[in-house]
Length: 475
Image (cartoon, one colour):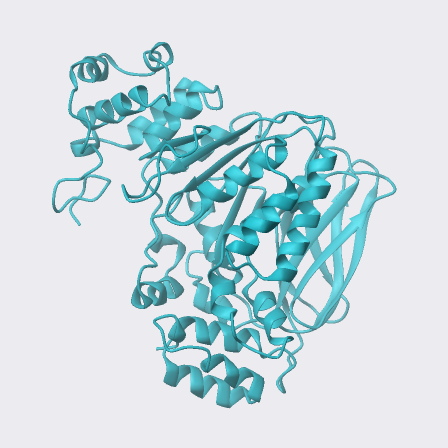
């Protein structure tokens, strides 16, 4: 299979180049099959085979009207239809040079904004300060080729008002939105072959996201440690679930690999690819700089990795409870690269200075995917086990409506996730402070109300009977 060492070697031999071959020598652990291939492919920029790109994948983005950030990727082959595309399709179609124009259609008499792009590594980001700011709204983003005809994937640019004081929802993906298995090399290899239809969201989570964005269009940004070549598949899954989002931020594996290789060694590449705290924290700080100064946050994640750490650090920086210098010391202790630490500390200091006199709300919700992870260590984190408890917690803060909660409840269906299970779940949420009794009784049925008051044993509510999935259907 493509993730094996033999297949990787044949691919590298077909491309040529000693730098590419280095990607197969950085380890013999269970990571070496899949990530050696990723490393080798990322390191091959500038190789002997260069094709004129014919297709462009543009990214959605969000910000304020005075500045725009527009990113994308140049491809040399068309992608399969959204329902059929897999990460593997993107993995082998990367890093082509080319040039063109990014077009932003301004329908308010401002004509079309044009931003020239020239790249030699396939990925591009245009960051511009506008003399005439864009008005709040959503703008189509298109691509115009400098020469020849090119296909493209149109995108959206969301512009928020400078005085926006609402929330921005930022959510992890794996084990927060999607039921993802990446515990073994075999399961990770399967992820490369999955289509959008193969991926499964946690029951009720699409309803949660649709409730959060709601009629007022609350911004929703997904941020994941998954590689960038998962983008088309994830975008297709979000579309299937009817989730409107404003940005999808994925980890730039190629850029990380190249930065390490420039130092003359592949040592530390695997740890850099797996590291999440510094990566996600830096992305959050960069996002805050592009968003309205008084925007608050709803942060959704899980305890499988480091979301609960990253979100708490981000909140404490915003609220002045953590000095950037102390953050730098903590990152260094975790083994984060010295250059990365310096860059993050500098950005954090700028953010703290900018927000010094503000008190923006930051609400953190963390799904416990197992009992092994920490709980209760931070009183500002709202822990939960399922989408229903999350919905109740969001309803307590008036971030979703009672109707949204009932939609989540209905999505859980019958069987072991029916009334009795929801009652046990609600009882746990009530006893752990996710929701008050007064608010809870506004959204439960009479049957659930009786079960909640009678329920004494909620310790194992999250364990499905043997042979059943979370949806209540046989495996």
